[in-house]
Length: 194
Image 1: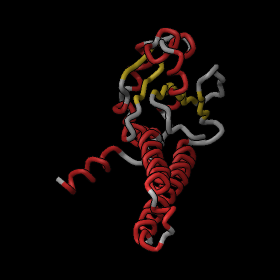
Image 2: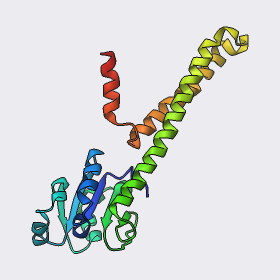
Image 3: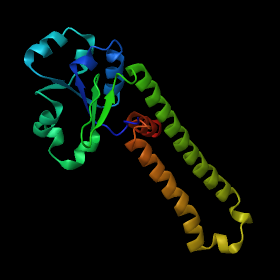
Image 4: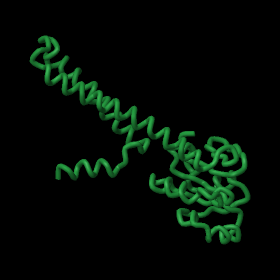
């Protein structure tokens, strides 16, 4: 399952008690995910506070079931935000419009491995497209004197440079949106020239 666009991660008490939960929460918080603990009452939360994974929880929501909590919670207020919600639980559940990761089917370690494989595939595709565009520009400008006159003409030359430039920009924006290219990289790139 690819959950690169999930911003709100709801975790129930059983998932938080998993031995791999701390490492999993650390990976999610490094990627700017908001981790929300879902419990039935305050007493259940008090028993979870001693776990090391509890330190990664941003906030806690209370309710008898997740559907009723989501009805009240602010992440659910606008309909377009439901696609950004991920629910991690130990028991199998189905929720309308929300991705559910069931830990009975696969453990947190397997989920992390799958996530890393998806990111690696995306990174390879994005790097390939970017390198292809850069090589195209290099070949175009090196061979500019040898190209026929109609390919050096204003309109055609503009299109021959504009299309790969658009592809390069869109690919970089896609990489930023899917968090394949971290925001820190962009600032480091600008710091090289500053």
